[in-house]
Length: 468
Length: 81
View (cartoon, rainbow over the protein chains, first blue to last red):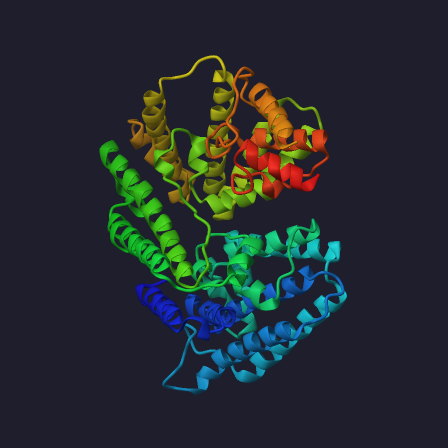
């Protein structure tokens, strides 16, 4: 989100708060979220893709809503209204192409109304059919999880993204030979996919409450959280949506504080640090170990300030509309060990992976009578590899994931060994542990920040005092 | 009943997870956010609860938001018995 976008959302929140109960909040949030998906989508060189990708986010969410309905649930008037509002808004965004002074909400001119209308009709039909014929069917739910993972792989693995970009360029009559992986930048897909997989999986286990279409869509593409999280849970989000909300002085002060903190962290501190934070270019040029450490410290701080700052902004905006998004950071660089670091860094992603990967895997392996250490190692490696690959399917992200998996494993075994045997003095454990943990994490960022093992190797040699 | 469940949970956690069988946990002591139980041991705790009380704890519930103390876990178990 840009400063203008944040300012407009905050102003709308204040306006909504001033009008109070006279505004139907759930419809306001649905409309804002639907429009924001189009507005926040970055431009792409592929014609009209900045319209089709947001529409795909909405269509995919609506179809998955149909699948997660309790079997035999009739389509309610409220669901039909939500569907019509969403279709109407999407059509309205497309119609802006004919209004020269108001064009456009999307980054480029939207497509013609006829193809848009056809696609909207197909989406409505698929949602209706899915809700009538396949709601709650385990194979259909599982297939949709597979589809989301497949899309995820295409978007995160550069050769496949380039291939998909070439295909889309050909479809639109553009030169396919110019395709690159950067052609397809799907706003917030990583977060959207994890929210949708959560609803599918919880529907499979019977834990997902019944959500109306407006609640489901607002949850999936809630505008403060669409581009960089946090990853909320549907049942928690629904409670906030259903509760009475009045923007009182306390909430206003809290929201204002979070927004101010977020703006300072992201737009002042993080953006300033970006000037000399580690990047592929300065990593290739730096000549001394001292400067390499400066670049790395700046990167570690910038990454935290940028991401945690963004989370403050998302939470602050959410509060203005009566939604308390979950926290994503808890002083990660001050934690005394790596396990505590991961309990305080990108918390909603790690909780998601614990709930849907680590815990089920550990539970399954526990039944096999494998040695405890082997089970722990397997769980940590699989989970942290996924954390790494979630950022992009590259060797360096995989190594970054393994770096942390091994760190967590070593800490776990050490903690288990020390249990009941001896205890370090509390102050030493806290300060020494925090310093050690921060440096382990900071060195790990080398893999995260740099695209190739060669570049990472060059920087490690400088950092650790060796020759280039 | 709640006291009984808390006492049994206390025995399991201190002996099997913390390896400090002589210790007694406070009913409201932070188990997960306080770092007393790690994510691996949480799965073991869930298996213990399931075997002992026949109550299923979902994998997505093994976190401090769902329960973070003996009192909260005992209440959760009792609500499902």
